[in-house]
Image 1 (cartoon, rainbow, N blue to C red):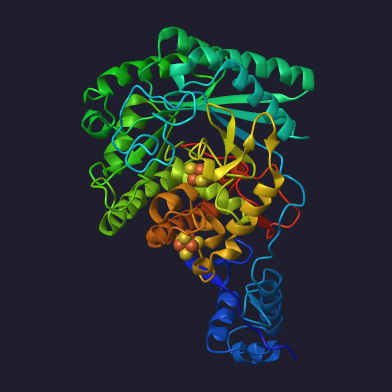
Image 2: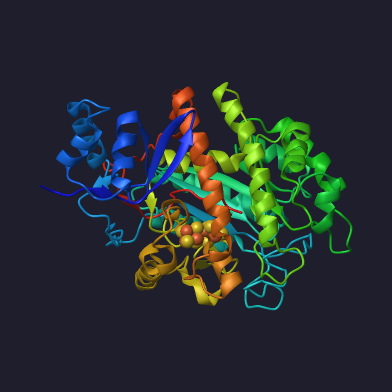
Length: 494
Ligand code: SF4
Ligand code: SF4
């Protein structure tokens, strides 16, 4: 008879119940008393099913134990071998359809944020003296549109996101590109969706009107109340940008109501007060959602978050996440988007082979039309995938996919959070370690702590208000929820 043992799983408790996060399949499994007892017994050592039934006979009916064993085997929480087979290295045989194209319409900015990955000390592309034009031409933008529709293949919808530099510095090209993309979409029988990221300082009334009328999704880069915003987000003369940006944001929020407007906050060592930032942006200014990201930087910069800072960050995230959970249980909206995104990933249960869609379903275009892994790599010759006129090199893309697969990250193979993290952002790794292939080992504790918190919230909502989770159902659900995923189909561009 087969001898059973535990498979790789992360345990957590929520709403007074035990749960397992099954690492190979990225599935969440609620345990009842009997299945908990089966697992407890197997923790003492491998045993065959009859042995388990005998061991638990004083507490449980044999049929109940056999049923629990069958369920645990079905979800692969227990098996005949403890050794998890490595994730199959599934590689696409043909190019993956493009879902999102990020178009950097300019590499110039009217602000001079100290920590900016594009202009700061850690930049990878020389946007001042490099080969690229400072502004994308109408012709290159149109070529980008054609490239997007071509590469989106049979997908019915293409997503175009405008980015910079400061996107609105090239508003004329942004406008004409949208008109052209709409026309081409109609001719091709497709849909096209638009969004952009801006620092808000150039939101004139006519720009706001255009964004509202055209249902453009807008993300505002802003770091919080005045003292925090003005610490790093300054004009070139050193003047803070809050007083310029805040009234324009209020005007945008008042007029543009057809799509939720989100704020995107960069956290630094000096601006780590998550709750105060959230209160200001969500409650006082009226953003629908607020998302936070630790600054991407080499560790030696004075704004880099230290190890102790990550602990502080985690406890602040946990406090705000508890608010999100309470709101979810009462069917109220809460705008802490980091929780929503992680709950969605947990709910959809994809075990990621790649941390994000960069180089797969998402690519970035530089002002000269070069196509890079994502918007942060656009214009970097070392991370070029092709260009909008000649297309993406499938050989280059395949080589990237082969070398960046989770299986190549040996440090991650024993980590229970790998289905969610998969090694983390390539740009962060490149800035920290000089290579996109390296996992971001400097923030593992933070990732595991945050994933554990989101699992607890997920479990509590699943028990107390399961209908809330329906919003996260995956429209692209694969028939095998445990199948490895090639990355997130859509990307929060930041
Ligand atoms: S980078 Fe760290 S947290 Fe992420 S999968 Fe690898 S080991 Fe786990
Ligand atoms: S996670 Fe990093 S590599 Fe991926 S799309 Fe975002 S910035 Fe680019």
